[in-house]
Length: 138
Image (cartoon, rainbow, N blue to C red; front, side, top):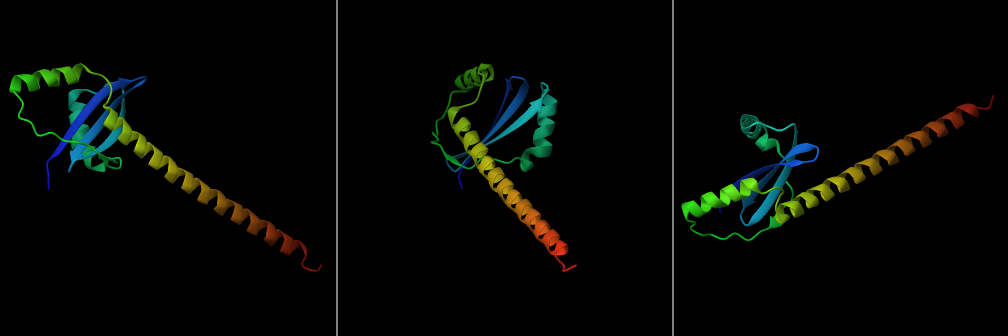
């Protein structure tokens, strides 16, 4: 079992604040997107993580290369500062979100198709029943 690292990016995506959870596990990237609505405070984000992290629906895995490097603490601090100023999400995360969105859309399509067929079958049975009631030989 390898390392697991999590990252949360919160940014403003007109008109809502959005959080993107990225989980890197065994060289695979999993992503989940959460819409916060109004700008969340730090303690609200922390509370959300504590209460809802295990209920998040992460996207299917996307291959990702991981480099194990020893990083100078000052350089790491500068990188964190730079990440805080950057807006948006990484392309790998975007790909994972698109994959999840596509998967959800396919599931929704299948459900709605099944529901339409069931409704059509029900309506057909009702029509047949009405026909039989009309022609009872009276």
